[in-house]
Image (cartoon, rainbow, N blue to C red):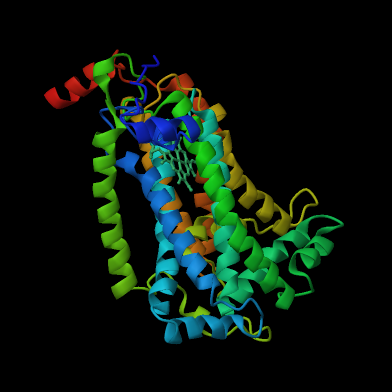
Length: 418
Ligand code: HEM
């Protein structure tokens, strides 16, 4: 049921004047203010969308400041970053803020996505919100990869080499595409320049897509942990002041963690090899991406044999591509009429196993490409794909779900009584 919120009423001559010409206060009222009604039972997992937005803002601000001093050239890139750290006023803060911010952005994004899976947020009528989310995830991954390459340290250089090398698996034209993307046979001056342009531009594309994401969400309204749609006016509260206040608390905690990491453990997420300038003649013993790519990197390395005349490397690239794209199929893979994991005990077990599986995949992706990590990664990849492509589609046919209460109010009353 769609409840009609109170419309915006300009209170004085100035706001009436402005509203006629540029209704920005009305927009705030409708999107973040009293005009957006939100289920009153949202838990703290519903704060992570806003936290991802805050992390994105930190990335854009620190990124702009870095770009004022960074030199996009293969000879100067590494040194310019070291100069930012040492000689630019608060350069260390800006650079560490950008490094730590990237990790916290992905942490917030992953929690936001897993929340969506557990509570069935991808189901009708929010499929488009979900699809735009998956697009955001892919854009974020591309941006992070490009940014990491810009450091032009050993790990940056070789990560760029490995990832662009994946293009060469495309039959017939692969090698041509790889050279075209790099602007040469290996990462070089042209590569740094184009990666910089793309890394600068993409965050603004992401920002625009976040606008679409929130717009699509507002068409249908927020979901909630019960998965039951709003039926009565008593089940909602206005975004302002209730969730603005709650988001404010979450942002404070987030900033506390961010500052603790920036000031005390700025390099906790980073590979020390990236403090060695790029050397095209010396391959690091163990090339690995940043932590947020480890699970996908493990999937890539899990394909070790040629099959059906297709080389293992091509299978790896297809597997890794599918491991991301499959998130976009979720609304159609899971047909359970029950939305929230709260009322799906069997789903809940498989979901917890899925979380453990992703951690295991990540752990395998971090390790050198040798046994037992490859074999373990293969089993973990198998469960990863089975969860999406077998378990979720079959579960609704066999699962006995708990009785779903008829309203949010009844569901929450039952929970507090229990
Ligand atoms: C830049 C990245 C992103 C930003 C800034 C962002 C922001 C937001 C915000 C502010 C909300 C409303 C509050 C909330 O439910 O947490 C939201 C909701 C949602 N987001 Fe995202 N999001 C991002 C990425 C994603 C991704 C990667 C997915 C999934 C693949 C996703 C799926 C959803 C869904 C399904 C909802 C609706 C949840 C519900 O109301 O039940 N988002 N997002």
